[in-house]
Image (cartoon, rainbow, N blue to C red; front, side, top):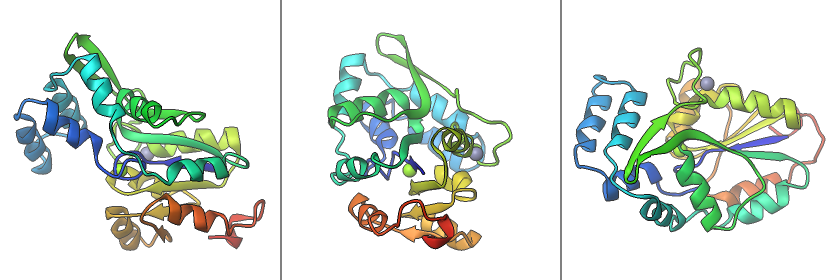
Length: 221
Ligand SMILES: [Mg+2]
Ligand SMILES: [Zn+2]
């Protein structure tokens, strides 16, 4: 079994990319946001150009992300599932920030896949997309389905997605079990994808605890 965990809106209740832009970017980032919403630029262009508008050095950025409040129930969830399952945080956000937030919360022992944030000057950032997949319909920077399939080869299935939004849509279509909150619930309803609604990781943990381990997924979905 492999758990694929979304970051912004899921493991972190707030969207850390939006919060970073609000606090540390030139206000021009909002124009890019409306260009993207209006279909004038792609999601990737939008994200890349917004990140280029951030003015923060390593120390400010590290501090910003280490102070992000994560779901307080995630740690208990991870301690429980690590005994029988793999877990990866797979996000269409910023790898540097996610890793700093996890360090800040004392969480470790699982891989993180996200878009790659690099410093190109002491206070200038650039974003690249090492997990992009041209064949993915999502248009995300990170193709979550490709990573989930890879992780399932390593850890065995079933694939369990825990997510909240647009970046989870591609994986929701192929995951064996979907835990959904926020707009991912609507997506699943529209697409006829069976899912379990949740609010936080205490909900997820109490359901996972009822699963008879090693039973085929049909028995639990
Ligand atoms: Mg999300
Ligand atoms: Zn995909």
